[in-house]
Length: 315
Length: 273
Image (cartoon, rainbow over all chains, first blue to last red; front, side, top):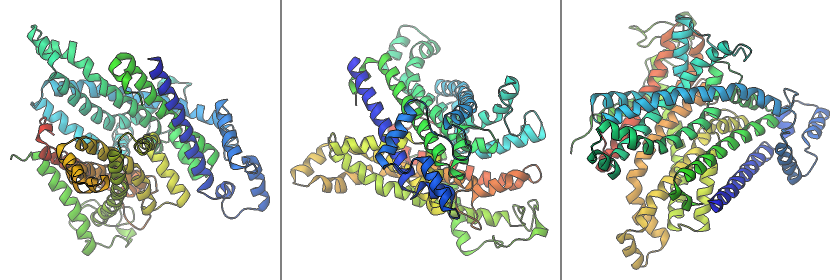
């Protein structure tokens, strides 16, 4: 186990290092001169020189990369060019919207998907299965921003149960949760459709396993065998997908955040890209990549703890 | 052989989508670039089957031309993913366990770790918005999908007797990959291509919705939705029609892909949908 942990940790650090190098090079080399890219074409030489100084562009490339890494290691992401505040503060502030939204959506998605998937698998090829799988096909095909527009039309414009956008802050937790409800539903439904299908097919696979047949032969009813033996084993791929979906929700909420005018991480990235604030862009992209790689790492470790067979499959 | 009803529904919806795009090449009921402000937000009726938008443009005509935009972007994006991804996967499988294989697989993991949408927005920010950059952005994330799928499918073939026979006949790895492995993984690739195609249509709509896809005056379903958003309460049909077009197209392609997979590999058949 120690060897496995060591291997995985080294691989995690290597992935993070390569990812950071890619992000750095793409943003430093592709636009040509980053300072000119940020300021646009009509700019004075003085402003350009000042920004180059502020960005540290006078130092050689490797020194700049190492300086960025060293800064991030101690939580210093630099100063935003457009907002004139530390990028770390900006990111933390936005995470207070993005993280709860992602958790909210993931919770909703799980609460919908697991019962639907289990019911469909238990009634395999029956009417419930057929209608549930038909609905999930539509859920997968639904663009979440269009679904969000329909939700706004129904629940904000017509019924007036929710506001159509904006975020009041966490001073009033009730209002904050209300503001996040429609976005969370819009994000959760397509995700739930995918998760329900994974749950169903995984449970159907486990229900065919020998140990479930043994449990049935011992005299357990179909339902008992399903709950006590099949479900727990069937949850493994479901948890993997949930891990992936959580990282997707963190980064992929960008369009939904735009629909509802939520000040989240995705919207920060979008605004920073539009304003050509490369200092914010590279940090937000790095944070999101860090989240994805780390979540994958943690899921791997969790599996190895549960299932010793997986430890031998070290990279 | 019994053909699943979902396959037929999927095929019909997908075909309708292609036909719409083809028809738009030779005929649309109205000119999609002609503005008629006096005629705006007309509800669906005899003259305009699906109504008009806030500029008085005919929505049915825009849906037809929008189908063309979706197909063009999605087709090229998936094509880019296949043309680069499949050879990478084939080569990786033919040298399984080598440093090259490792490099390809680690590279794949790395691309998967990047938030696709943000990278797409970044690409369009650096190179400017437009259909070509939307294609590049979507295409990049299709490469690892096809590389991984091809490698996985090819790996299991390399242990088979007919491959051993080909090796004994003196064929090299590259030739075996091309002549024996590729034809045997093509069904799997076709199924995945259908699914990726539908995902690319969703992605294109998303990019166009935030203003980074095909630029005006080329109609695209995603931008039609973005423009409709502010008047959804006033004229719901302007927002409903493009959304329904996206849903039915993506649904059709997914059903078609799933149906094809069941058709090619009946062992996978597990019931409805």
